[in-house]
Length: 260
Image (cartoon, rainbow, N blue to C red; front, side):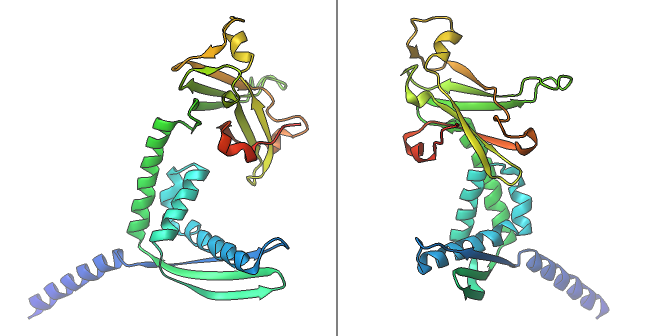
């Protein structure tokens, strides 16, 4: 009888442990949003809920651990959209308040730790494959294959500081074509944009190859762009923390800001 009780106890412990490992967990997120005159109350409510959900996902321990390898802002955004659209269960508002033009909402949902970990790792692997195929950025004309930031010679106070961008030509294009423009956007420690710098290939590529009659760039050619102004004039180096390199694209016209 004691032997039977012992076996039953062990079996119960195993079942309890396994079921507990696969149990859903509760996540909560909170956000307050103040909307302007050009926004409707309905629009503000949607934004508040969206950001509360994002806060819940971003603060979830499994997401933080699993997403640590997805070191890319856009891919993290994609991942959060995927999770919020298909992996949140029993989503509900547990607190809501409107005061003047500020809306605050706290949401709650249940998630499966295993599902979140799995989808996050899958996206991490797919992001590596995406970078291999498309590069860091790709506008159909050029592909950015790598970037490097050099702080110059540490023994020289005023040593050169530059961002080096390596680009591959995907198809035959005129060297002065606007699609050969490469941009660098600089950010501070809070992720706020400091400024955007650009460099074109119009004459630089011709001079680089020492052929003033050259007019075309050919598929397979590798080109190196060097941005020497790091940090930008008037911006202390201590404020410059990170950067994003991107290509001119018709779809990005609205993002382009001239560096004055």
